[in-house]
Image (tube, rainbow, N blue to C red):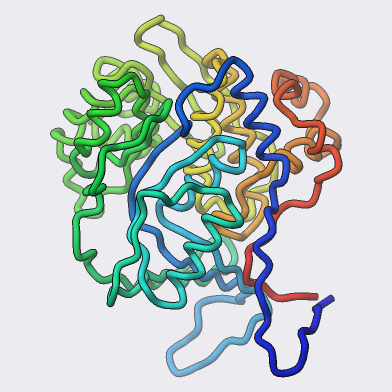
Length: 371
């Protein structure tokens, strides 16, 4: 039901926290002491993602398709920032924001609704917010992105990096000096990368892993960069370069090697029906970061990451489809998977806040069709 506003007054979007249990979840994680102010720090570019759903297919030239499915959410680096914050991690983000309507919406959504610390982010006068429009149909999608160059380098914080237990970087580009500095101060550096559109897969990208503690590529990326024929071979090759490597295999789960301890783990994906896998890699990474900072064994880190990613792929909603603890608790009470499978996730129970039992409705995209 749509709530009407008074005549002549603009509607005010709700920015209420959709994951009220994130704070008590964080308190359980930090029960051992105060520690740094932030758990994770990262920088990058935030996009305005607009996702049209319910389409029969792509619109033919010269035609128009009308749909009642529209989701809108922060995208880009915000995908993983939101996913980590919803689990109770204290997240800091340094990013440029346009001084337009989309920039204002993204800033307020991240800072007020999703509890992401934007203390090192900046509003850029005269710069337009990047926008991605996605049209989802069947099991595919088409996207159009508008983006203008950022006036100043993304990794130029303009200030010393904050104290944090970990940071997250994209090794597509050189590891930023602030991450090297944070690692020297004791922070764990988690690294990921994207698909190489050029097809070159340059080996020097792997040289950047000298500054990384945990590397989380997907199977195709890992095999391409290492010139290997299987995810297992790729993991072995990468284990010689980085302390912990995790190879994501989508619906086939994930495998990991801890080169420091010799520990190895391989875990299947959560057996759920995937509606939209977009962004699942970011949610997986967020779950792995949380489980690592919680001190869980390697196999449980993989299972928790798979759990978070599996819950996210059941919806079409971008970053705002990342699971809250309420959805994790509700899934544990459902009969969606066999009891034997659910028993493998019993280690998660101590982290579920008491408040999550009453918060079983997943968060929705901020802009959507109301029924």
